[in-house]
Amino acid sequence: MLLKSTLSRRTLLKSTAGSAVVLGMPAISYGQGDSIKIGHLTPRTGFLGPLGDYAVMGIQLAADEINAAGGVNGRKIELVLEDSVNPQTASAKAERLIERDKVAMLIGEISSASGLAIGQVAKRTKTVFINTGCNSDALRGSDCNQYMFHIEGANSMYVQAVGTYLLKENQVKGKKWYSLTADYAFGHDLLKVAKAFMEKNGGQFAADELIPTDISDFSPFLLKIRQARPDIVISNLAGNQITNFLKQYSEYGLPFPVVGFAFDTAVAWGLGKGNFSGVWPLVWHHLVDTPTSKKYIGAFSKKYGKPPENQSWGDYFSLRIVAQSMTEMKSTDPIKLAEHLRTGAKFDIGKSREGYFRAYDNQMVMEMYAVRAKKAADMKDQWDIYEALGTVPAAGEDLESIAPPKGACNMA
Image 1: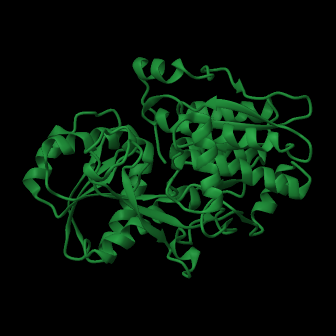
Image 2 (image 1 turned 90 degrees about the horizontal axis):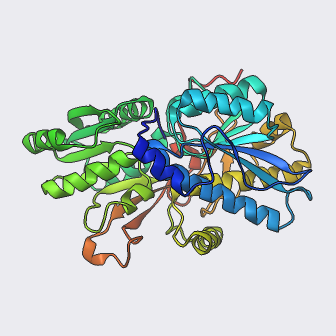
């Protein structure tokens, strides 16, 4: 997902207090002479910091499991962890990981702006980069390249996941939407996709507001929503913006249904009982009932004392995909790895159907999900905040039916 990073002293201290990561210095999680180094970049500070913490937990768990099972062709995985504070820092650290630390490839990122910067380094150095949290369709379109892969869903995939259920519940045609959109690359891209969906299906926007990422007081916008009386309020917000908005929306007691076109479970876990509402899309959630998913949830919960969420899923399964591919190839060569991933090789990513990278744009083709918030009285504990509505596409439907539209990506 998204954008520029907003850094305050308070969030910096909070985010780094319990972390091994020190700005400017990489954190080495495992060391061995003939190990395979994997570079990991993700924001650990600012309003995306809480999501970055889950990303690190996910990839660390995957490395521990791979190494405990003997590594990759007998070689241990060594993670080199970096905090990608903003696009400029992300670019510089990606280059340093490749040139100085000699990593075999890169995994991570949440900000779409930083993801683009890392992708440009990956292209220039011919190093594979798997994006685990950047949603912007442009990364799969005009900004695509042959070394940048995406296990994260694109904005268009998220909109179709939740849009499928809005259509079933007659919440689109003839309805007025009032949207709040994070004011940066990710939000702009998502709003464009959401408007296209609305116009295609007969709805209209009562208003759309761009929200700066450093705003925490939503009162002016809540008063406007109350006056406009829309049929649905749409969230195109990101990170802690969602937490702040939903808390205040609940406090104002507004009666209009809330729907999100982008979402991270971790931000809702931080809301407090009774403040979460609406229908939301997810790339994965902890209620997915498959053997691989259950095994992952069990291992993560045992190690960290809480269930995993969608961001940790992306980083965990990306490293497992890389380890599986390198084992099968018997090589860590980045060009061979990129070619292997683009062959249509299928991977168990904890869903009912295997996923694969589409050669056209390197997007992981896979199932997406929609969830509905539970009422406070129905919640069993702090993690039990929503019910699963189902998968999109449904069983038996073509997985590529929700893939980003073709036309803008030119791998050459």
